Length: 517
Image (cartoon, rainbow, N blue to C red):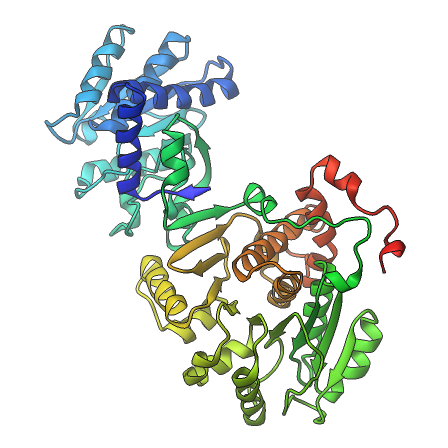
Protein backbone atom coordinates (compact mmCIF):
# COMPACT_ATOMS: atom_id res chain seq x y z
CA UNK A 1 0.00 0.00 0.00
CA UNK A 2 1.32 3.41 -0.96
CA UNK A 3 1.62 6.33 1.44
CA UNK A 4 0.93 9.60 -0.34
CA UNK A 5 2.46 12.93 0.61
CA UNK A 6 0.27 15.94 1.30
CA UNK A 7 0.92 17.30 -2.19
CA UNK A 8 0.03 13.94 -3.75
CA UNK A 9 -3.20 13.78 -1.73
CA UNK A 10 -4.28 17.13 -3.16
CA UNK A 11 -3.23 16.09 -6.66
CA UNK A 12 -5.19 12.83 -6.36
CA UNK A 13 -8.31 14.77 -5.36
CA UNK A 14 -7.86 17.14 -8.29
CA UNK A 15 -7.37 14.38 -10.87
CA UNK A 16 -10.31 12.39 -9.49
CA UNK A 17 -12.61 15.40 -9.78
CA UNK A 18 -11.49 16.00 -13.38
CA UNK A 19 -11.56 12.41 -14.63
CA UNK A 20 -14.79 11.40 -12.89
CA UNK A 21 -16.51 14.67 -13.85
CA UNK A 22 -17.62 15.42 -10.29
CA UNK A 23 -17.39 18.50 -8.11
CA UNK A 24 -15.16 18.86 -5.07
CA UNK A 25 -18.37 18.89 -3.01
CA UNK A 26 -19.29 15.51 -4.53
CA UNK A 27 -15.93 14.09 -3.47
CA UNK A 28 -16.44 15.53 0.01
CA UNK A 29 -19.87 13.88 0.14
CA UNK A 30 -18.26 10.57 -0.81
CA UNK A 31 -15.64 10.94 1.92
CA UNK A 32 -18.11 11.94 4.63
CA UNK A 33 -20.45 9.12 3.63
CA UNK A 34 -17.60 6.61 3.99
CA UNK A 35 -17.01 7.85 7.55
CA UNK A 36 -20.74 7.66 8.33
CA UNK A 37 -21.04 4.13 6.93
CA UNK A 38 -18.12 3.00 9.08
CA UNK A 39 -19.72 4.46 12.22
CA UNK A 40 -23.24 3.26 11.38
CA UNK A 41 -22.13 -0.31 10.66
CA UNK A 42 -20.72 -0.54 14.17
CA UNK A 43 -23.24 1.48 16.16
CA UNK A 44 -26.35 0.22 14.35
CA UNK A 45 -28.50 3.05 15.66
CA UNK A 46 -27.39 2.88 19.31
CA UNK A 47 -28.65 5.93 21.27
CA UNK A 48 -25.21 7.20 22.20
CA UNK A 49 -24.59 10.98 22.15
CA UNK A 50 -22.29 11.86 19.25
CA UNK A 51 -20.45 15.19 19.23
CA UNK A 52 -19.11 16.28 15.83
CA UNK A 53 -16.50 19.06 16.05
CA UNK A 54 -15.89 20.77 12.70
CA UNK A 55 -13.32 23.29 11.65
CA UNK A 56 -14.06 25.78 8.91
CA UNK A 57 -12.00 24.16 6.14
CA UNK A 58 -12.48 21.03 4.08
CA UNK A 59 -11.89 18.69 7.02
CA UNK A 60 -14.71 20.52 8.76
CA UNK A 61 -16.80 20.06 5.63
CA UNK A 62 -16.23 16.31 5.86
CA UNK A 63 -17.47 16.47 9.43
CA UNK A 64 -20.60 18.31 8.39
CA UNK A 65 -21.38 15.56 5.86
CA UNK A 66 -20.96 12.95 8.60
CA UNK A 67 -23.20 14.94 10.96
CA UNK A 68 -25.93 15.27 8.34
CA UNK A 69 -26.05 11.54 7.64
CA UNK A 70 -26.03 10.76 11.36
CA UNK A 71 -28.96 13.13 11.86
CA UNK A 72 -30.88 11.65 8.93
CA UNK A 73 -30.46 8.19 10.41
CA UNK A 74 -31.81 9.15 13.80
CA UNK A 75 -28.62 9.38 15.84
CA UNK A 76 -28.32 11.73 18.83
CA UNK A 77 -26.00 14.31 17.26
CA UNK A 78 -24.62 17.65 18.36
CA UNK A 79 -22.57 19.56 15.81
CA UNK A 80 -20.07 22.30 16.74
CA UNK A 81 -18.20 24.75 14.54
CA UNK A 82 -14.75 25.48 15.97
CA UNK A 83 -14.80 29.08 14.79
CA UNK A 84 -11.14 30.09 14.65
CA UNK A 85 -11.35 32.27 11.51
CA UNK A 86 -13.78 34.29 9.42
CA UNK A 87 -12.57 32.47 6.31
CA UNK A 88 -14.48 29.34 5.24
CA UNK A 89 -13.84 26.93 2.40
CA UNK A 90 -16.42 26.78 -0.39
CA UNK A 91 -17.32 23.14 0.29
CA UNK A 92 -17.60 23.78 4.01
CA UNK A 93 -20.25 26.43 3.29
CA UNK A 94 -22.13 24.11 0.92
CA UNK A 95 -22.35 21.40 3.56
CA UNK A 96 -23.11 23.85 6.34
CA UNK A 97 -26.25 24.88 4.46
CA UNK A 98 -27.15 21.26 3.73
CA UNK A 99 -26.90 20.37 7.41
CA UNK A 100 -29.07 23.33 8.43
CA UNK A 101 -31.74 22.10 6.03
CA UNK A 102 -31.76 18.67 7.68
CA UNK A 103 -31.96 19.51 11.37
CA UNK A 104 -33.66 21.88 13.77
CA UNK A 105 -30.52 21.84 15.95
CA UNK A 106 -28.21 24.09 13.98
CA UNK A 107 -24.46 23.77 14.54
CA UNK A 108 -23.24 25.53 17.69
CA UNK A 109 -20.40 28.00 17.22
CA UNK A 110 -17.41 27.69 19.56
CA UNK A 111 -15.21 30.78 19.75
CA UNK A 112 -13.76 30.55 23.27
CA UNK A 113 -13.62 28.41 26.39
CA UNK A 114 -16.98 29.84 27.44
CA UNK A 115 -18.63 27.92 24.59
CA UNK A 116 -17.25 24.48 25.46
CA UNK A 117 -19.93 21.76 25.77
CA UNK A 118 -20.10 18.96 28.30
CA UNK A 119 -18.83 15.62 27.01
CA UNK A 120 -19.71 12.41 28.85
CA UNK A 121 -17.25 9.52 29.23
CA UNK A 122 -19.58 7.21 27.27
CA UNK A 123 -20.15 9.67 24.43
CA UNK A 124 -18.50 9.61 21.02
CA UNK A 125 -16.50 12.52 19.60
CA UNK A 126 -15.90 12.95 15.88
CA UNK A 127 -12.88 15.18 15.25
CA UNK A 128 -13.08 17.15 12.00
CA UNK A 129 -11.35 20.33 13.17
CA UNK A 130 -8.06 20.34 11.22
CA UNK A 131 -6.96 18.14 8.33
CA UNK A 132 -3.72 17.56 6.44
CA UNK A 133 -3.73 21.18 5.25
CA UNK A 134 -3.09 22.70 8.67
CA UNK A 135 -0.55 25.50 8.25
CA UNK A 136 -1.21 27.90 11.12
CA UNK A 137 -0.50 28.08 14.85
CA UNK A 138 -3.32 26.71 16.97
CA UNK A 139 -5.04 29.19 19.27
CA UNK A 140 -4.72 28.56 22.99
CA UNK A 141 -8.46 28.11 23.43
CA UNK A 142 -8.45 25.31 20.83
CA UNK A 143 -5.60 23.65 22.71
CA UNK A 144 -7.82 23.87 25.79
CA UNK A 145 -10.63 22.22 23.79
CA UNK A 146 -8.25 19.36 22.90
CA UNK A 147 -7.48 18.95 26.60
CA UNK A 148 -11.20 18.93 27.48
CA UNK A 149 -11.94 16.21 24.92
CA UNK A 150 -9.04 14.08 26.14
CA UNK A 151 -10.07 14.49 29.78
CA UNK A 152 -13.62 13.41 28.95
CA UNK A 153 -12.32 9.90 28.03
CA UNK A 154 -15.02 9.77 25.33
CA UNK A 155 -14.21 7.59 22.32
CA UNK A 156 -12.65 10.01 19.83
CA UNK A 157 -12.62 9.33 16.09
CA UNK A 158 -10.51 11.62 13.91
CA UNK A 159 -11.33 12.16 10.25
CA UNK A 160 -8.25 11.53 8.09
CA UNK A 161 -5.70 12.69 10.69
CA UNK A 162 -5.82 13.84 14.34
CA UNK A 163 -6.37 17.58 14.46
CA UNK A 164 -3.12 19.45 15.00
CA UNK A 165 -0.89 16.68 13.65
CA UNK A 166 1.15 17.59 10.57
CA UNK A 167 2.03 15.14 7.80
CA UNK A 168 5.62 16.30 7.36
CA UNK A 169 6.89 17.73 10.64
CA UNK A 170 6.44 17.38 14.38
CA UNK A 171 4.09 19.62 16.38
CA UNK A 172 5.82 22.17 18.55
CA UNK A 173 3.99 20.95 21.63
CA UNK A 174 2.16 17.71 22.42
CA UNK A 175 -0.84 19.66 23.72
CA UNK A 176 -1.43 21.03 20.22
CA UNK A 177 -2.56 17.65 18.90
CA UNK A 178 -5.96 16.15 19.64
CA UNK A 179 -5.74 12.71 21.20
CA UNK A 180 -7.67 10.26 19.00
CA UNK A 181 -8.56 6.67 19.77
CA UNK A 182 -9.08 5.92 16.09
CA UNK A 183 -8.19 7.62 12.81
CA UNK A 184 -10.23 6.91 9.69
CA UNK A 185 -7.80 7.87 6.95
CA UNK A 186 -8.92 8.54 3.38
CA UNK A 187 -7.55 6.16 0.73
CA UNK A 188 -4.09 5.63 2.29
CA UNK A 189 -2.48 5.97 5.73
CA UNK A 190 -0.16 8.86 6.56
CA UNK A 191 3.57 8.48 7.23
CA UNK A 192 3.17 9.96 10.72
CA UNK A 193 1.03 6.96 11.73
CA UNK A 194 4.22 4.88 11.84
CA UNK A 195 6.91 7.07 13.42
CA UNK A 196 8.10 6.71 17.04
CA UNK A 197 7.91 10.48 17.64
CA UNK A 198 4.25 10.61 16.62
CA UNK A 199 3.15 7.21 17.97
CA UNK A 200 1.76 8.84 21.12
CA UNK A 201 -0.94 10.46 18.98
CA UNK A 202 -1.97 7.27 17.17
CA UNK A 203 -3.80 4.40 18.85
CA UNK A 204 -5.48 2.74 15.88
CA UNK A 205 -6.08 3.63 12.26
CA UNK A 206 -8.09 2.30 9.35
CA UNK A 207 -8.13 3.27 5.69
CA UNK A 208 -11.41 4.05 3.92
CA UNK A 209 -11.69 3.90 0.12
CA UNK A 210 -13.26 7.11 -1.18
CA UNK A 211 -12.81 6.32 -4.86
CA UNK A 212 -9.69 8.30 -5.71
CA UNK A 213 -8.82 7.67 -9.36
CA UNK A 214 -7.33 4.15 -9.48
CA UNK A 215 -5.02 4.99 -12.38
CA UNK A 216 -3.52 7.83 -10.36
CA UNK A 217 -3.02 5.55 -7.36
CA UNK A 218 -1.44 2.85 -9.53
CA UNK A 219 0.85 5.11 -11.53
CA UNK A 220 2.03 7.53 -8.87
CA UNK A 221 5.43 6.84 -7.34
CA UNK A 222 5.49 7.51 -3.61
CA UNK A 223 8.25 7.90 -1.07
CA UNK A 224 6.82 5.33 1.33
CA UNK A 225 4.97 2.03 1.21
CA UNK A 226 3.19 -0.09 3.82
CA UNK A 227 4.25 -3.74 3.67
CA UNK A 228 1.59 -6.23 4.74
CA UNK A 229 0.25 -9.60 3.68
CA UNK A 230 -0.96 -8.44 0.27
CA UNK A 231 2.45 -7.03 -0.63
CA UNK A 232 4.55 -10.03 0.42
CA UNK A 233 2.18 -12.51 -1.26
CA UNK A 234 3.29 -11.03 -4.58
CA UNK A 235 6.85 -12.11 -3.81
CA UNK A 236 6.20 -15.51 -2.24
CA UNK A 237 7.92 -18.39 -4.08
CA UNK A 238 5.81 -21.59 -3.86
CA UNK A 239 7.41 -25.03 -3.90
CA UNK A 240 6.64 -27.88 -6.26
CA UNK A 241 6.34 -31.60 -5.67
CA UNK A 242 9.87 -32.37 -6.90
CA UNK A 243 11.61 -29.61 -4.95
CA UNK A 244 14.78 -30.58 -3.07
CA UNK A 245 17.12 -28.88 -0.65
CA UNK A 246 19.62 -27.99 -3.36
CA UNK A 247 17.13 -25.57 -4.86
CA UNK A 248 16.78 -23.42 -1.76
CA UNK A 249 20.28 -22.22 -1.12
CA UNK A 250 23.10 -22.86 1.31
CA UNK A 251 23.62 -19.97 3.69
CA UNK A 252 26.47 -19.16 6.04
CA UNK A 253 26.03 -17.46 9.43
CA UNK A 254 29.25 -15.97 10.82
CA UNK A 255 29.45 -14.89 14.43
CA UNK A 256 29.66 -15.92 18.04
CA UNK A 257 32.28 -15.49 20.72
CA UNK A 258 32.76 -16.99 24.16
CA UNK A 259 29.43 -16.70 25.98
CA UNK A 260 27.55 -15.56 22.85
CA UNK A 261 27.26 -18.70 20.75
CA UNK A 262 23.50 -18.65 21.27
CA UNK A 263 23.21 -15.67 18.91
CA UNK A 264 24.53 -17.74 16.01
CA UNK A 265 22.39 -20.71 16.95
CA UNK A 266 19.26 -18.56 16.85
CA UNK A 267 20.20 -17.07 13.47
CA UNK A 268 21.04 -20.48 12.00
CA UNK A 269 17.78 -22.02 13.24
CA UNK A 270 15.81 -19.09 11.87
CA UNK A 271 17.52 -19.37 8.46
CA UNK A 272 16.67 -23.06 8.16
CA UNK A 273 13.13 -22.59 9.47
CA UNK A 274 12.52 -19.79 6.96
CA UNK A 275 13.17 -22.28 4.16
CA UNK A 276 16.90 -22.37 3.49
CA UNK A 277 18.00 -25.70 2.06
CA UNK A 278 21.29 -25.89 3.95
CA UNK A 279 22.79 -23.84 6.77
CA UNK A 280 26.39 -23.63 7.99
CA UNK A 281 27.54 -21.70 11.05
CA UNK A 282 31.07 -20.27 11.26
CA UNK A 283 32.08 -19.84 14.92
CA UNK A 284 35.10 -19.91 17.23
CA UNK A 285 36.07 -23.36 18.53
CA UNK A 286 34.08 -22.91 21.74
CA UNK A 287 30.91 -22.96 19.66
CA UNK A 288 31.41 -26.33 18.01
CA UNK A 289 29.91 -28.62 20.64
CA UNK A 290 27.03 -26.31 21.63
CA UNK A 291 25.91 -25.94 18.02
CA UNK A 292 26.31 -29.60 17.06
CA UNK A 293 24.41 -30.61 20.17
CA UNK A 294 21.64 -28.03 20.28
CA UNK A 295 21.07 -27.68 16.53
CA UNK A 296 22.06 -30.88 14.70
CA UNK A 297 20.47 -29.72 11.44
CA UNK A 298 23.25 -27.16 10.96
CA UNK A 299 26.78 -27.78 9.72
CA UNK A 300 29.58 -26.08 11.63
CA UNK A 301 32.90 -24.55 10.62
CA UNK A 302 35.27 -23.24 13.28
CA UNK A 303 37.99 -20.69 13.61
CA UNK A 304 41.36 -21.84 14.93
CA UNK A 305 40.84 -19.63 17.98
CA UNK A 306 38.93 -20.90 20.98
CA UNK A 307 37.10 -17.77 22.16
CA UNK A 308 36.51 -15.48 19.17
CA UNK A 309 36.89 -15.32 15.42
CA UNK A 310 40.32 -14.33 14.14
CA UNK A 311 39.98 -15.32 10.47
CA UNK A 312 37.08 -16.07 8.14
CA UNK A 313 38.09 -18.81 5.71
CA UNK A 314 35.87 -21.20 3.80
CA UNK A 315 35.75 -22.90 0.40
CA UNK A 316 32.04 -23.63 0.00
CA UNK A 317 30.13 -21.53 -2.55
CA UNK A 318 27.41 -20.14 -0.27
CA UNK A 319 24.24 -18.53 -1.63
CA UNK A 320 24.09 -15.79 1.02
CA UNK A 321 25.95 -14.81 4.17
CA UNK A 322 24.82 -13.28 7.47
CA UNK A 323 27.46 -11.90 9.82
CA UNK A 324 27.77 -10.13 13.16
CA UNK A 325 25.59 -11.98 15.70
CA UNK A 326 27.58 -12.26 18.95
CA UNK A 327 30.77 -11.63 16.97
CA UNK A 328 32.45 -9.25 19.44
CA UNK A 329 34.81 -6.42 18.55
CA UNK A 330 38.21 -7.83 19.47
CA UNK A 331 40.98 -6.30 17.37
CA UNK A 332 41.81 -9.49 15.49
CA UNK A 333 38.08 -10.03 14.86
CA UNK A 334 37.94 -6.56 13.29
CA UNK A 335 40.93 -7.44 11.08
CA UNK A 336 39.23 -10.69 10.02
CA UNK A 337 35.98 -8.88 9.29
CA UNK A 338 37.78 -6.32 7.13
CA UNK A 339 39.53 -9.03 5.14
CA UNK A 340 36.22 -10.82 4.63
CA UNK A 341 34.45 -7.68 3.36
CA UNK A 342 37.24 -6.95 0.89
CA UNK A 343 36.87 -10.35 -0.79
CA UNK A 344 33.18 -11.16 -0.37
CA UNK A 345 30.96 -11.15 -3.46
CA UNK A 346 27.91 -12.93 -2.01
CA UNK A 347 24.61 -11.37 -0.93
CA UNK A 348 25.22 -10.15 2.60
CA UNK A 349 23.31 -9.36 5.80
CA UNK A 350 25.15 -7.51 8.58
CA UNK A 351 23.84 -7.24 12.14
CA UNK A 352 24.93 -6.57 15.73
CA UNK A 353 28.72 -6.46 16.14
CA UNK A 354 29.18 -6.39 12.39
CA UNK A 355 27.42 -3.03 12.50
CA UNK A 356 29.44 -1.93 15.50
CA UNK A 357 32.65 -2.67 13.63
CA UNK A 358 31.41 -0.64 10.66
CA UNK A 359 30.70 2.24 13.05
CA UNK A 360 34.21 1.94 14.52
CA UNK A 361 35.78 1.65 11.05
CA UNK A 362 33.58 3.63 8.62
CA UNK A 363 36.14 3.14 5.86
CA UNK A 364 34.95 -0.47 5.63
CA UNK A 365 31.55 0.64 4.32
CA UNK A 366 33.00 1.15 0.86
CA UNK A 367 33.78 -2.59 0.69
CA UNK A 368 30.17 -3.72 1.12
CA UNK A 369 28.83 -5.71 -1.80
CA UNK A 370 26.05 -3.77 -3.58
CA UNK A 371 22.63 -4.13 -1.95
CA UNK A 372 24.00 -5.52 1.29
CA UNK A 373 21.35 -5.53 4.04
CA UNK A 374 22.16 -3.79 7.34
CA UNK A 375 19.77 -4.37 10.27
CA UNK A 376 20.50 -1.84 13.06
CA UNK A 377 18.44 -1.21 16.16
CA UNK A 378 18.14 2.52 17.08
CA UNK A 379 21.44 2.82 18.95
CA UNK A 380 23.36 0.94 16.23
CA UNK A 381 21.73 3.18 13.63
CA UNK A 382 22.86 6.28 15.52
CA UNK A 383 26.44 4.99 15.51
CA UNK A 384 26.23 4.60 11.73
CA UNK A 385 24.45 7.76 10.60
CA UNK A 386 24.93 10.09 13.58
CA UNK A 387 22.40 11.64 15.94
CA UNK A 388 19.15 13.04 14.56
CA UNK A 389 16.83 15.84 15.65
CA UNK A 390 13.58 13.95 15.13
CA UNK A 391 12.15 11.08 13.09
CA UNK A 392 11.93 13.13 9.90
CA UNK A 393 15.60 14.03 10.23
CA UNK A 394 16.42 10.39 10.99
CA UNK A 395 14.72 9.21 7.81
CA UNK A 396 16.46 11.88 5.75
CA UNK A 397 19.86 10.79 7.07
CA UNK A 398 19.01 7.11 6.70
CA UNK A 399 18.02 7.59 3.05
CA UNK A 400 21.23 9.50 2.34
CA UNK A 401 23.32 6.79 4.05
CA UNK A 402 21.59 3.94 2.20
CA UNK A 403 21.96 5.73 -1.13
CA UNK A 404 25.63 6.59 -0.57
CA UNK A 405 26.62 3.00 0.15
CA UNK A 406 23.99 1.36 -2.12
CA UNK A 407 22.54 -0.78 0.64
CA UNK A 408 19.21 -1.84 2.11
CA UNK A 409 19.00 -0.32 5.59
CA UNK A 410 16.52 -2.07 7.90
CA UNK A 411 15.66 0.24 10.81
CA UNK A 412 14.32 -2.02 13.54
CA UNK A 413 11.48 -0.83 15.77
CA UNK A 414 7.73 -0.99 16.31
CA UNK A 415 7.20 -0.42 12.56
CA UNK A 416 10.48 -1.75 11.22
CA UNK A 417 11.31 0.22 8.08
CA UNK A 418 13.50 -0.80 5.16
CA UNK A 419 15.23 2.10 3.40
CA UNK A 420 16.34 1.56 -0.17
CA UNK A 421 16.84 3.81 -3.20
CA UNK A 422 15.33 6.83 -1.41
CA UNK A 423 12.15 4.93 -0.53
CA UNK A 424 10.69 3.63 2.73
CA UNK A 425 9.07 0.21 3.19
CA UNK A 426 7.16 0.14 6.48
CA UNK A 427 6.22 -3.15 8.11
CA UNK A 428 2.92 -3.53 9.99
CA UNK A 429 3.43 -6.87 11.76
CA UNK A 430 5.05 -7.39 15.18
CA UNK A 431 4.36 -6.46 18.78
CA UNK A 432 6.13 -5.52 22.05
CA UNK A 433 6.88 -9.19 22.74
CA UNK A 434 9.79 -8.80 20.29
CA UNK A 435 11.52 -6.52 22.82
CA UNK A 436 13.62 -9.39 24.15
CA UNK A 437 17.15 -10.72 23.70
CA UNK A 438 17.89 -12.61 20.51
CA UNK A 439 14.98 -11.54 18.31
CA UNK A 440 17.35 -9.46 16.19
CA UNK A 441 19.49 -12.58 15.61
CA UNK A 442 16.34 -14.40 14.50
CA UNK A 443 15.54 -11.61 12.03
CA UNK A 444 19.05 -11.80 10.59
CA UNK A 445 18.64 -15.54 10.11
CA UNK A 446 15.27 -15.19 8.39
CA UNK A 447 16.50 -12.49 6.00
CA UNK A 448 19.68 -14.44 5.20
CA UNK A 449 17.62 -17.58 4.59
CA UNK A 450 15.37 -15.73 2.15
CA UNK A 451 18.35 -14.21 0.36
CA UNK A 452 19.75 -17.70 -0.06
CA UNK A 453 16.47 -18.87 -1.59
CA UNK A 454 16.75 -16.33 -4.37
CA UNK A 455 14.69 -13.41 -3.14
CA UNK A 456 16.30 -10.12 -4.13
CA UNK A 457 17.73 -8.05 -1.26
CA UNK A 458 14.77 -5.67 -0.92
CA UNK A 459 12.27 -8.55 -1.05
CA UNK A 460 14.31 -10.59 1.44
CA UNK A 461 14.47 -7.67 3.85
CA UNK A 462 10.77 -6.76 3.64
CA UNK A 463 9.50 -10.35 3.52
CA UNK A 464 11.83 -11.32 6.37
CA UNK A 465 10.64 -8.46 8.57
CA UNK A 466 7.03 -9.37 7.79
CA UNK A 467 7.49 -13.07 8.66
CA UNK A 468 9.40 -12.17 11.83
CA UNK A 469 6.61 -9.87 13.01
CA UNK A 470 3.78 -12.15 11.91
CA UNK A 471 5.32 -15.09 13.76
CA UNK A 472 5.50 -12.93 16.88
CA UNK A 473 1.86 -11.89 16.43
CA UNK A 474 0.78 -15.53 16.25
CA UNK A 475 2.94 -16.75 19.14
CA UNK A 476 2.14 -13.88 21.50
CA UNK A 477 -1.52 -14.90 21.64
CA UNK A 478 -0.49 -17.99 23.59
CA UNK A 479 2.46 -16.59 25.54
CA UNK A 480 1.83 -12.89 26.15
CA UNK A 481 4.28 -10.05 25.62
CA UNK A 482 6.37 -10.66 28.72
CA UNK A 483 6.96 -14.39 28.26
CA UNK A 484 7.76 -14.64 24.56
CA UNK A 485 11.43 -15.31 23.81
CA UNK A 486 13.43 -15.40 20.60
CA UNK A 487 13.21 -19.15 20.04
CA UNK A 488 9.42 -18.86 20.28
CA UNK A 489 9.54 -16.57 17.26
CA UNK A 490 11.45 -19.23 15.31
CA UNK A 491 8.84 -21.79 16.29
CA UNK A 492 6.12 -19.52 14.89
CA UNK A 493 7.64 -19.03 11.42
CA UNK A 494 5.80 -22.06 10.03
CA UNK A 495 2.47 -20.68 11.22
CA UNK A 496 3.36 -17.32 9.66
CA UNK A 497 3.89 -19.03 6.29
CA UNK A 498 0.62 -20.94 6.61
CA UNK A 499 -1.21 -17.72 7.44
CA UNK A 500 0.22 -16.22 4.25
CA UNK A 501 -1.08 -18.97 1.99
CA UNK A 502 -4.57 -19.43 0.60
CA UNK A 503 -6.27 -22.79 1.29
CA UNK A 504 -5.50 -23.94 -2.27
CA UNK A 505 -1.80 -23.12 -1.84
CA UNK A 506 -1.67 -24.94 1.48
CA UNK A 507 -3.02 -28.07 -0.24
CA UNK A 508 -0.25 -27.86 -2.83
CA UNK A 509 2.46 -28.10 -0.17
CA UNK A 510 4.10 -31.58 -0.04
CA UNK A 511 2.20 -33.89 2.31
CA UNK A 512 5.34 -35.76 3.35
CA UNK A 513 8.50 -33.68 3.83
CA UNK A 514 10.54 -36.89 3.84
CA UNK A 515 9.99 -37.10 0.09
CA UNK A 516 11.84 -33.83 -0.43
CA UNK A 517 15.25 -34.37 1.08
